[in-house]
Image (cartoon, rainbow over all chains, first blue to last red; front, side, top):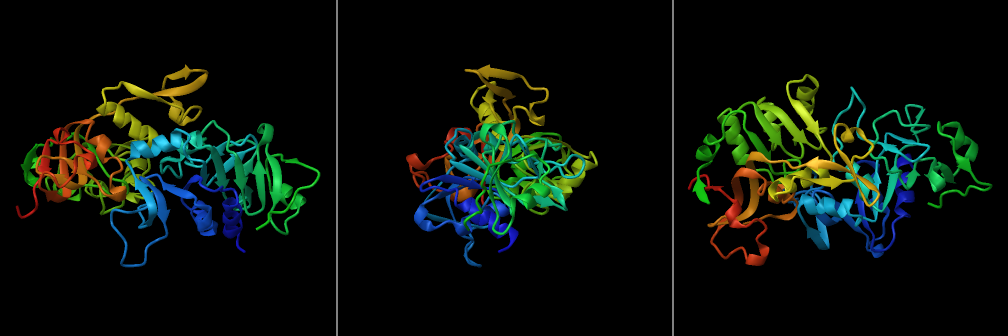
Length: 216
Length: 217
């Protein structure tokens, strides 16, 4: 199982029956592959759709039915469409149960930075700030480290996405939560020891007596 | 509402105008109007649009032709030309959160001075803005956004100018149709009055100033 699959499979376990869920671009998009249709989860695409379905077969794409990256998608039976003010009313208004986003950094207090690297990458925040401010639960799905550097840091030095802390971080090595506002090791990836996680994590982690492995 | 040719409509737009353009990554964007803006070389434009689409698509065409001087958007990362024009200061870019973008435009069209949103509190977005507490929670005051023109793309337009939109091409079109002095519309299909049932009209006819006629009409 590669790193992305570990993350996507573990995040999928966080989704509950009937949840309204927004998946960001990148690893978060893969989460849908591991969610059973029996769970009846609704996926929102913030460009104006609840009930996103799989990518249509080649030749069956509809030019007016796309995801937030402009790629063709399909709509499941029971889907609904709406304008952007409604879409972000759903997001900001706490109607979205879970949002899953990528991250550049998450700090010891659960603050996320994921929209800008000053002087290098200034794409814009798109919907990320609204999602992190307004969704009921915010899950960050990202690699634990990039180019050997921990993405779980003491304090973000990149611009924050929101002053509101995230609920959970799922990486290829660990699941980290923030009870009492402190980064806490909740699970390790299969075959990864607590020591190994600590060695590649810049932020201090609270570690309980026994840290279970992810069951994926 | 008046039905006009695309040439006639774009001729009304002065150089340096402020223009809202509907669409999300080019989906739901009035391409025929943008092609004509490029052909008539309307330059120095202030564009208000969710994103910069892609080179050759949607508002991306305006960056290809270097007609934009200011852009208000939420995300331009998928258009390298717009990125480059921003980094070399050819265009001034104001990047704002997408929900805030939608609400500022909605406020502009609904007679509101602005909205209070929790989005952006404690981030770079809050710089220079008033923070207001309501029931102990902090919000940013985000002021209303309007433009001289809104370029809107509908799926159906009837002979009076009632509009409906299809699937994910609705996006910012309905709020923009409320927030500009002059609203110009292209539609995939122009249909007789009554084809769009009253319950299915998403933008009522009195909001539409000009409807672009079919190319060979």
